[in-house]
Structures are given as C-alpha cells and as structure tokens.
Length: 436
Image 1 (cartoon, helix red, strand yellow):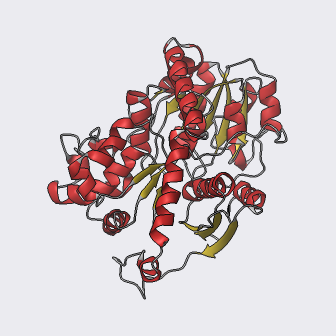
Image 2 (tube, rainbow, N blue to C red; image 1 turned 135 degrees about the horizontal axis):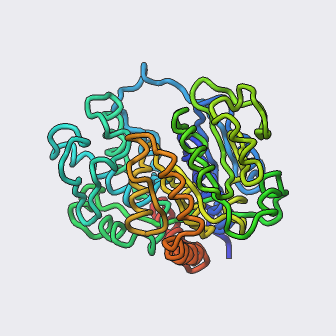
Image 3 (cartoon, helix red, strand yellow; image 1 turned 180 degrees about the horizontal axis):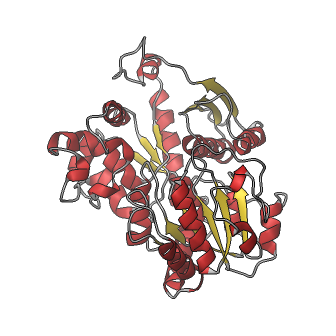
C-alpha cells in the first residue's frame, strides 16, 4: 500500500532556544512518521553555533534545512501584520509549535484577556494572575515581555499571542503526565478554550537532544570519568545567559566554600571576550580577571572551569553528576529531567521564573535561592548551601526519586503508543484531513 506523502514546512524564528527543538521535532517527524520535512531557519546572525551546524549536517539525509537571514520588514509591513497571511492565501494548514511548556502556553494565549482585566503594571499586582483552570502566576514570575506594559515590545507580544490563536492547532513541548491540570484546562475549560478558539492541543514532548553513547569523549567527559559517582555539580546558564561580574564572584566563592566538585561553564560579563576553551590553573590574563584571585589554583583538584560552551547532554548523562545549577530554560530543563538530574533553579529571563516555580513547588525536583537572582545578587553562603544540599543533603533523595519518575514518564511518552507519539499521529491525521 502506498504511503501518504505529507510535506511539512517548519519555520524557525531566530534564537537557539527555538531552533534546536524545531530541528529535533522535524527529525522525529521525518524518521518516525515518514514525513518530508523542510526547516526554514530564520537566523538573527550570519552564523549559528557550531554544535547546531553539526546537528543540521547530521540530519541532512532525513530533512532539508534552509537558512534564511533575518530581514527588517518594518517599512513594508504594519506592526500588527498577520504572519499567517501566506498560508491563508495558499490554503495550507498552519500549526504553532510552542517550544516551552503548557503553563507558559496558557499564560501566553490568555494575555490579551489579562490585558483588559488588569489595571496598572503586572509586577505591581498584589495577587497572583488567574488563568482559568490553571495554576495562578505570581506577579514576580511573569516573563520579560510582560514586565512593562508601556514598552512597544509589549504590544508586539500581545500581537503574537493573538496570532497563535489563529493557527489550526498548537503543538507543545510537554507530555500528558507532566502537566495534566494545565493541558486539561487548555482542552476543556470553556473560557480558556474560547481564547484559543477551540483549536486542538497536541503534546509532542519531550523534544530535546538525547545522549548518544557513540559520541567521542572530550576533555570535560574525560575529567568526569575520574570523579566519584554523583559527586559533581554542573553549572551553566545556557547559550545566551549571562550574569554580572559581582554575581560571578559570589558564585565562585560559593562553589569553593561548598567544597564540592563542579564543572562550571563560565560566560564572561559584558566587556570581556573569552580566549580559548579552558581556563588553566594559575592563569592571570584577561580571560579570568572576573574570577576571584587564586580561584582556579585553589579549586584545580575539585573543579573544571570551561569557557562559554560544554557538551551539556553528555555531562548530564554522566554518572558522576549529582545536580545541575541551571537558568531553567526549557531545553536545559528537559535535558536535566530526561537524564534524571535534580536541579538548582536560577532563572534569568524569558519564562524561566515560571519554569523555576514549577520545578521547585510543583514537581519538587529542584531547590532555589531564597531571593530571585533577577532581584538581587545571590550570596556565596546561599550558593554553598544549595550546592551542598544537592550533593549530600537529605532533600535531594526525594528530588532524585521525583526526577527519576519524570524521566521514566518522558521515555514512555515518546515511545511508540506513548501519549506524545499518539498525539503526533493525531496531528498528522488532522493535517492530512485538512488538505484532502
């Protein structure tokens, strides 16, 4: 019997956080569901990170990736222009892939309603923002685009939220067992359903980079091989996350005071340019002048400080890793969960504060600083406490059990006949029925 040929075009907006899951979902559609997939990657810069380029190269036998430079169309298109116009004209089904979770999706799509209900700035509200059928969002958890309603970017954000509801459906990078309450609300709560115009919601997650045992070992993994099981804290703030020089200093002192092993991916504060991939003990040039004097020498037996990038999935999969100090980007969160690694939640921007709240209060797989890092510098004593708790504290035992359960649920969801696999099949079936 002939196989149905459905050609799916995935439009990836600028930003590594969006491009990576779109590439991975496209690859899954091509290899697991026999679809022809083209990824139109709109890039904000002339080049994309090397590891993404390598990923694209490895996928070329299964899908087509076309890089399109970002263009300024403000002079020819109104700010509230509908980005779905071309698909409408051609009669092509249009779906949105939300690379974040369902709770973020609910707040995002409900924002135009909140815009009419709330008086004043969201961050000044005394009570949590209510989303029908979902967990409320505290004012200090909202994502960056909602921080200032007087900023023109807020209008762009609202327009995007309205645009999402014009799609024929939403694919969300989550799975049924992870967010049952929110997913149920998006599908059955009449108020929320009316906002998304009664469109279907498909769970396709976790869509994240997986560990490949055949990958060549680099210096970081070789260093981890020499460490005891579950003894190392991995510290990274993602591909775009940066912290102040003062916070880098406190974090360094906190790691040293904890007396625990660590791998720290350091991205220099503004004005510094890293030179080389690894810092060396005793190094004193400009590449480490924002670290405490003597830090590299004093910690050389227990720590490895890496400049800018490290093989994160390989690190998180390693048996010597006990925990992950993370900015709570959804990609990094999923990589930690699917490798069974508890976290220290250290949100910086975007929807990361919501992710941190979910991880610590609902899923109970993370600890976090006493005060949000976006509000004040986290002191060295607080850093040391969290690191020690994650390596040898009693609370981490419960977190490890919880994260291992999530890991098993994630693996089950994407297997054949799992909830996300079935959801993708339903998405394909619905697409096919629309073009007949």
